[in-house]
Image (tube, rainbow, N blue to C red):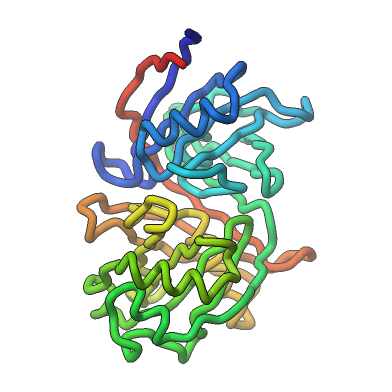
Length: 295
């Protein structure tokens, strides 16, 4: 059997056992796809990452991201956490990760003493918008009433900057009442197929004041009943919010994971670029465990 070192980190938090946990294998050379998937399932976290040499030597690494059931093209907290785990590899404060969705740039921020402060990732693709979902259908999936789904700012719709989510605004007082209904998710995914077969990650957000949002993400069909921090949903959210204004850029602090007892803070930004509206998200991480896995 081969032995592989791993670390775990709590991402988007400065508090141990807060944020979103992540497992990182900093050197996954020699692992098969099946072994990576089995390890991700064994860890039973929302994602696990596997770091490999880059195909282009100008980049830092190739990073593969697996959830409990499948490989992902891009995800937020896995990149922020992996960037933190291999921050020592940065050149001029930058890491460049090759992923299915494209190249992900990670900025490593240190203070004057060289202490790591945060890692900030730029999503690999500009904002794209897709199909809209009926508010009543969405409300049933998350145990809310259709009246709880707000449509004044935007209707529930698919949005992506590398990983697609169904994004919906809800009344602030309704956010904490949301409870995923697995059977409703299955039924909705059968009729709403814009996100792919049997896939329906729903990202709810609510106004929490100027430049502030609260959010929750449910993806029970992929094994994540609720996610404590979802950077790849926060980024299309802020890109979508910017697209609804005439501003050139915007910044939002997004709180997630509160209802799970794992509060997370995601600092997200969006800006207009020649390629479209781009977005980034960053935060702090706390290392938790180190170990060795045999496969």
